[in-house]
Structure formats: C-alpha cells, structure tokens
Image (cartoon, rainbow, N blue to C red; front, side):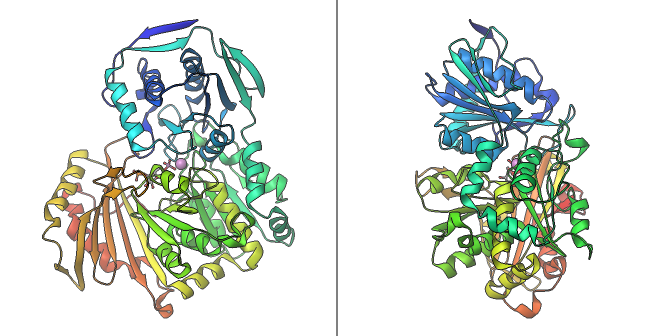
Amino acid sequence: MIETIATQPYDDQKPGTSGLRKKVAHFKKPHYAANFVQAIFDAAGSSDGASLVIGGDGRFYNREVILTAIRMAAANGYGRVIVGRDGILSTPAASHLIRKRGASGGIILSASHNPGGPKGDFGIKYNIANGGPAPEAVTEAIFEKTQTISRYRVWTETAPNISHVGETRLGDMVVEVVDPVADYAELMETLFDFGKIRELIASGFTLRFDAMHAVTGPYAREIIENRLGAPAGTVINGEPKEDFGGGHPDPNAVHAAGLIDQLMAPDGPDFGAASDGDGDRNLIVGKGILVTPSDSLAILAANAHLAPGYAKGIVGIARSMPTSQAADRVAKQRGVALYETPTGWKFFGTLLDAGKVTICGEESAGTGSDHVREKDGLWAVLLWLNILAERRESVKAVVEGHWAEFGRTFYQRHDYEEIDARAARGLMESLHDRLASMAGQRFGTLVVSEADDFSYKDPIDGSVATGQGVRIVFSGGSRIVYRLSGTGTKGATLRVYIERYEPDPAKHARQTKEALAELIDTADVIGEIKKRTGRSDPDVIT
Ligand code: VG1
Ligand code: CO
C-alpha cells in the first residue's frame, strides 16, 4: 500500500560536484534522506514502469537508505529496481548496469573518497539514463523540489531481503538483486586482453592493489586474482567495511602512503594501484615512481590503442580545466580533439554521448572512457596493465619515455581543508576583483598573460556553467588555478592547482616541488592564502 508521509523542506539539499554529501548525523535528521530521494523522483520525470538501479559503496547507513529508497520507488510507480547484493555497487558498475539494462536512472549511495562510519560522511547521487551523473539542469531541478517538498510516498511493507541474488516483489514492483561484480567483470573482458595480462603476471610481474576497505575489494579480487591469475594476497584491504577500517578511502600520497612506500622499496612489487570509496578513482604507482593522475591520463590516451577495446584509436580527449595540459599535447600530436570542461564527471556526459571523445580524465585521480559514463578506477588499472603487457617495459620507462616524447608537465595540487568558509569566499572574491588588472603584472620572473574565471558552454547542448575556478596563466604557459571544493562537508576546502611545462629532457628528472618552487610562492602571493586563511602549508599535496 502507498503511504504518504508529511514532511518539511530542508534548505541545504543542493547537490555539489558529485551529489549531496553531508555528515551521517545530518542525513539522519527526520526524513532527510527520504526528502532528497522523493525530490529525485519528482525531478526525474515519469517513472511509470521504469527500471531504477540502486547501489552504494557499502559505507555506514548504506543499507537503511537503500531499503527506504526501494520502498519509495515502489510507491512512486517504478516497475523494477535492480539492486546490488547487500546494496553494493561501485559507481562505474552502477553506470554500466543502468546502460546495460536500459534503466531510466540510478541512485548511488556514496560520499566517494570522504571517510565513512557513524561520524563520517554519507552521500546520495542520481545518475540519468545514459549512466552518467545528472547534469546541472537536473540537479537544479532536484534542488528546487527539495525546497518545496511537503510529502513523500513510501510503500508500507518492508523491503525484501537484499542479501540474496534473485527476484521478489514489493507491491507491483519487481525487486531484482544482482551480483554486483559479474556484469562489470564481463565488460572489462571485452575491453582488455586478459590473456596477455595473464601472461605478464605469470612471467613474474608482481602487483599490489589496495582496495582501502572500500567497494573495489570484491571487484579487484574477482578480476585481478581470479581472472588474471595474480596470487591471493595481491589485493590488500579487500574486505569492504562500513567505516573503511577507520581509514580515509582517498588514493593519494597521504592516505595510500603505505602502498606507495612498498613500491618505493627496491625489492617491492612492479606495479601498485589503489581505488577510492566508490571505485571511480585510481592511483597508479610503478616501482620507484608515482604517476600523477594528469600524466596517467596523457599516457593512457597515448597508448590506449594497445588494448583491444581501443584498437581503432581514440576520437578525442576531455579533461577538467584544472587537470594539467599534458593530455593536450597528446591530442595535438595525434590530431584528435581536446575538450576542457569544468570539474566533475557530469560535464563529460554530453561529449561521450555525442561520440566526440573516447577518454576523459581529471587531476583528482579520475580516468575513464566511453565504456560507461563515470570515471572508473579498475578500468584505469586494467588499461595500464594491458599497456605494460604489450610494451613489456616498466612503469618508470613508460612514463619517462612519454616525457621524452611530449615534454614533462610538472604539476601539483595543494588542498587547504576545513578552512573558514567566510575566509575562503573572501579569498575567491578578492581574486575576482583583481582579475581585470592582472594581465601584464610581474611576480619575480613570471609575467601574467591572462587571468579569468572559467566558464564553459557545453558544445553539444549549449548549457553554460560559470564561476568554475580562477585561472592565472603566465607567459610560457605556466598556470595557477584556484577553486573551492564542491564535495567537502565541513568548512571550505581551497584547491590550488599549479603547473609548468618543461620541454627539455635534461630537466625532466627534477623534483616537482623544486621545478614548481617559484609558482608555489607566487600562488600564495596572488591568492593571499596565508594572510586570509592563517594556513602556512596545505593539508594535502597531490
Ligand atoms: C572533487 C574532485 C573532482 C571530482 C569530484 C568527485 O571535487 O576535485 O575532480 O570529480 O571530487 O569525485 P571537488 O569539488 O571537491 O574539487 V568522487 O571520486 O569524490 O565522486
Ligand atoms: Co569516488
């Protein structure tokens, strides 16, 4: 039976870069999650008999919200929900299921790389029928609905057990529980030469995959250990836990330091990788070398044709604006298009759907292709392995060879986390105020050639996104970019992105922080970071 529950709007349900993210305690306020789910259904349009995919990264509170969402879907006219067993679906696996099953959309419960557990974060994200994150027009419509909501609909009876694969019913709706890994693993087999990678591993190539106690554990075990024959134990921290084992499932130099240390040891493995909470990010480490995500994007784009799924070559590359321009050089040399979009995967969807690009990436450790409409951590790992299996060179040799051919783009991102929100806004406003007078100004040896606030007009649907980050470009092409994060749940996070191109191979072996020293100092001078935030150093450097 359909029950209608009276509720009141919350004023803070505006989705950020990737869905709605708040502390668990915030999500547990009366009707908070239900309000947002109803707003999704109201904004998504007709659900009559449609299919909906539901899954999440297994974090604390996942199951409760999934069971509520199933009951709400039944009361809102959906014909079928497709749920990962135990509520588990990685973000890329959910994207694939939506596409494969022709669902009208999907609800992904995740706060991605943010910590979990009762004191951690929770999140809800809506993906549309193409499998990708809802574009801004849809997230805006959802937000509008949350502001006027007065009731939501829920099926009275409890949702069926989601721990067993199979079909049951709730009212008129079919509840189909699926193996979260099977379809995804099958898709990977169509893109990559599993036989070649198996041979590489059998030849003594050693690897480590750190699942960080997050969602990719079962996926990586099935694919890397079972199907590719890596020895048991290759996947570490492979048991998904509600609080990610107390860790922070962000595969970067700070939170994956243990894995990186192993790879820096002379007797360590040949290849290391890690993924984040919901499985869409990737970290790639070779013996003695950490591959920056921007370089990884460029290298994958340059070598993708070595994998069967991309043997015909790529048609174009898209990267988010703050991502380094290393990929641009590959696009230019290969004669394919390069698109620069705002931060967040939702901006790649139209380009992928229109067949304008094959590979997309962000500096935040996200890489993916037209196989789904999300970034995909394990996909990036498998593409790397396929390339290594073809080239039979070390990661270090591949990276250094790439720099020798295309030049090296030194790159760092500095994050200042949980800073005072007013101070952060003041910093950005002050930058805006000075933009017009910036060109021509000199800072040490650096001269500003252009300065703007990035805005983007989608070349396919014409939609416009403004205020996407302040860019300061210097003559010679070095850049500093400032923007505020749209995924944090406490205070504000300032991200400062710094890059410099170095064509001279004799200078490629320099340490990044030395190569960028003058730009790093200038970032503080122009941004007035210390003065305005009281912070002398970033919390995280990636
Ligand atoms: C961050 C990253 C962005 C990424 C987003 C979602 O956003 O910078 O590149 O798309 O997280 O990734 P922001 O607004 O905090 O800079 V995930 O893996 O958290 O879904
Ligand atoms: Co993620």
